[in-house]
Image (cartoon, rainbow, N blue to C red; front, top):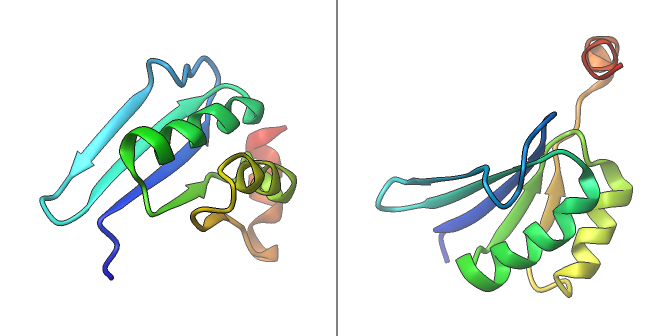
Length: 100
């Protein structure tokens, strides 16, 4: 089976998961990108991705981390893979500067 539908959740100041939804459809793959201000909003956004968009997997931006990855896996009933963006040690200082 090829990847044809997936979701990406990200956090950004002022983002609203009810409003900030972008769909990129190449004809072969459909990506639904959802922005939110807080990681806890990702639980409902992930449920909607599974129920309304039939995504095959969800990726989480670095603002979520392993705890929220677990919460979102549980919220989606482990029906699909959920992964989180991670940064290597060479990027830690730069990421810390951005999010501090």
